[in-house]
Length: 258
Image (cartoon, rainbow, N blue to C red; front, side, top):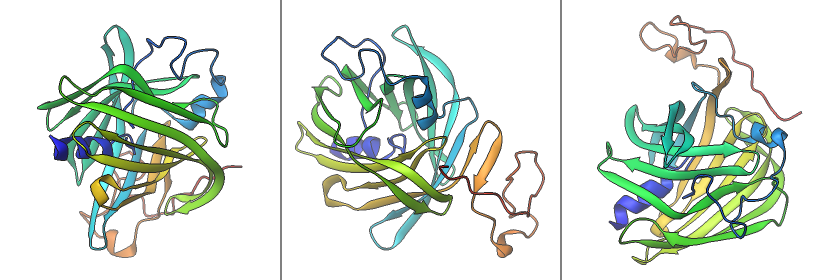
């Protein structure tokens, strides 16, 4: 159970995941109230087809590609949620069911290992509470499933410039840390930028070190980020950057905060 939970935390939507819920919040729960305004929706693009490609480094010697994609919509307990699929090296590893509104980003359910592991949250737990601003804090304590409970603290540490392969961005630095009743613990720091979403994540579940950096992303059908390497432009190796099923060797513009 511990290892399964750790994987769920790591693969949030970038991430990442982190464990958040849908819209039925009471007045004492973060995310209730007037929210931050519709402009904050730009910090978490959520149109079907939007995609984020990350390179993940595990400790010092293991690397993998992690992709998140808005794959559709589904109602969870009567609430319309987006389905955020996470794939590691092309293999489906999780689905997150998220509601995105001007109040924040919250998740109701996660399915891991092809639906063999389901993580439900009671009460809902906000991942991001809009508006984001330095020193803002909130907490969550509740059930992860029938046997496991969690206790987490969230904080907006700063707003700063961060550079990743996809470009240079002005981003809010948001920390989540806490533990579960099985004694597992985790700390996650994410950088979230306007018009992009999460651009970087650092996490340390159970003492392990993970770093994920955004390589490229597709918003509203347009792709930004890394230019393909020359050795990858040979037939059969070209990544479909333009989304039209044909090679696109020309540079892809990096988009940064204006």
